[in-house]
Image: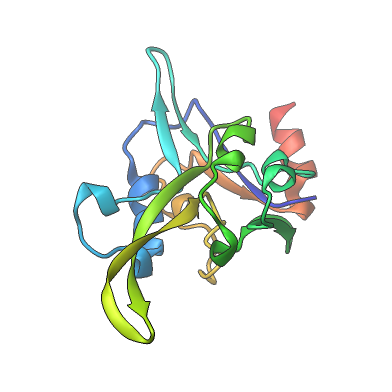
Length: 166
């Protein structure tokens, strides 16, 4: 069973704190504070009646993993993991995801010819929730949410979560 983040739609106030925490937790990827570089892996969706965060559900037997022709998405360590070097930007994972939780972003990387710098080129990268795998304290969005609308669910606390719902 994969770990995942769940959201309580009754508690979410649409403040976007989760998006900001997500971007800041991946600050190594943040080159400037321009909107084009503000790439949150969690997105708030607003309707007339509800606000809900949308993020990767870390599916078992994930459609995005099966759809990826290069193996850029794999199931590893109880989550769906990205291997950016293998991404070719085909967007098959975007189409396969039933939750709309994956984006492909283009990032500038140095272009070298015969070892000499020759400008820049663009490299496709998968943008989806990685459960803040580099953060020892876990998903930043969960810790930052002021209303506790987000929770990090591990295999061992699913029964507890089920009892709260019933």
